[in-house]
Length: 491
Image (cartoon, rainbow, N blue to C red; front, side, top):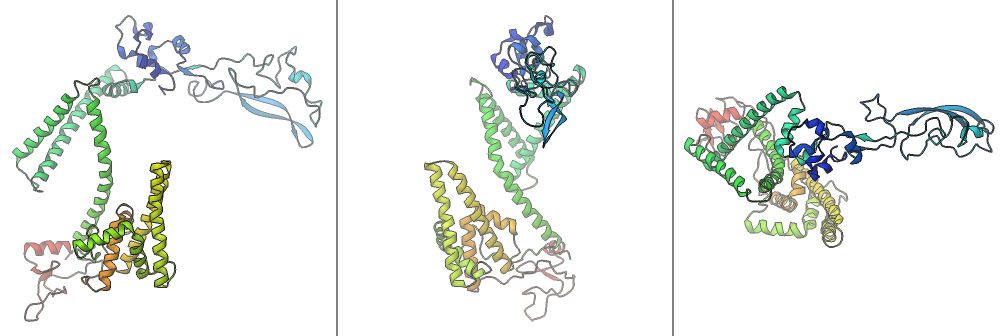
């Protein structure tokens, strides 16, 4: 609003002599007075075009003359079929050089309205002001047109030209009179101090815990050391920019970089939140901790490092080959015949994958908008990979993850997801995957009953009594691990 109204243009000129002497009443001028519309007289606003010139007269009865055009009740004859009837409508009252909405050059010579509309209705120089046509033209009842210039409101302030502290306190000052705004400023300063102190303390605690290898109660002296280190870093940043032309330039750049770098971690935290939900479900017994997962980790898709490298290279350059094999084994896609399905989807996926790099190259060398097309194609390709991963998950009764995870892996880690799918199906076909239960809900086992876990038997063949299985070895329920397992599995 300040930019459109010309207040910021005057503020950039930084001529304090333009400020209204009557408003200042002899007080010393501040160099910031140029940023406030209230410091300019209406005459100066008009001379410097600090305001707006709408195409219509604004209605003073609506929001103090801002936001709605004044309307005129216009009654005239109009043709409706073979008849000429009188019609009334509301037109906006024009101003300045705006065209007359009631203009009519001459009375009609043909049609049903001949004789109804006469020369006196449209004559440019009648003896009496016209009230039917050309109402807003010379000689009309509403001529001359009034000036529609609207000075910018006195409440407008060019905050962009102000410093950060000015913006804050200018905003607080708009909430009430001087005494109340002073009180609110004190409360705001106290809140800012508490915010920065607690934020620094929390940051020091987090850094201290990380440096203490995850210990939740690190030494206090170490925490104090990190607090002083962070404070010294902040002081160094402030001192580094004091010799610049704009002393806050380096700090502003650092703040912008912090926000830009922090944005990706926002989405990473969303993904971590999903892991937290799964962990809580495991703790309360809704999910089994040893439920079935993919045969390989997504970032290590192979039985050995060499095997993983081979699969990743193949998935990076020719992912269509691996995806064609996966589709033919998973089934349910176009062409049920495994051989035809494999070659068809191999060609389809590879063509889409190559098209991504073709459009990306065009975007770099010809027109950058082609990069957008490349990004769209890649997202579509990754989405298909995610759906295929989800199909393999359901086919193999894998309970780790869900459709959202599959799509994210397919879009953001495409070569790894493709290599993982191929490795999983190869190991599954070779019978190398561990046999884990596909049952999602943990069965309830009472303490003292025979534990129906795999391997839960003594050397003499009798079952363990009062023992729980922690995933590999049976542990006594009375031990610490047994108590944790009892809570985790809701026993």
